[in-house]
Amino acid sequence: MSDDVFPDRNMEKADKIAWVVETQGWCAEPVAPQPDPPTPGYTYTIGFEETFGHPELVIFGLAPVAARGLLEMIATHLEAGGELPVGSFIGLLDNDLPAAVLPIEMPEHAPLFESAAVYYSRDDFRIRQFIWPDRAGKLPWDEGYDDRLRMAQPVIAATE
Image (cartoon, rainbow, N blue to C red):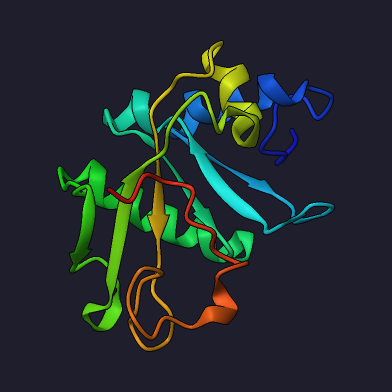
């Protein structure tokens, strides 16, 4: 008997994603940074809509393991009946650091979420961007935000 988590290592990627969502409720899909044009890495969820009735989430600029940990914390929060308000809020991150969750216009940004579009068989699914603060607790639209993070965490969500 094998301890392999996947029933078939030769599964197509879409089948693996469907299997993970079916067995675990959701999955995190990491996307590597791209050199041309320069695009930061990001991680997004597939399955939040079905499992929690919540739009999918994307986080830019964090290493996949860090993004996955944050998404796992959010999934636990949603599973317990918690909500993520649209806009800026305090209370999810340590030390009462602010964060924000904002809607992304689809299908304009659908090419960024190819695996989710394949999973849902459409490119107009709901997705929101989770925006994290800099070390000083500033969000990208706050005065004094660390400009070095603008490339790592582009805000593609609607801010108004």
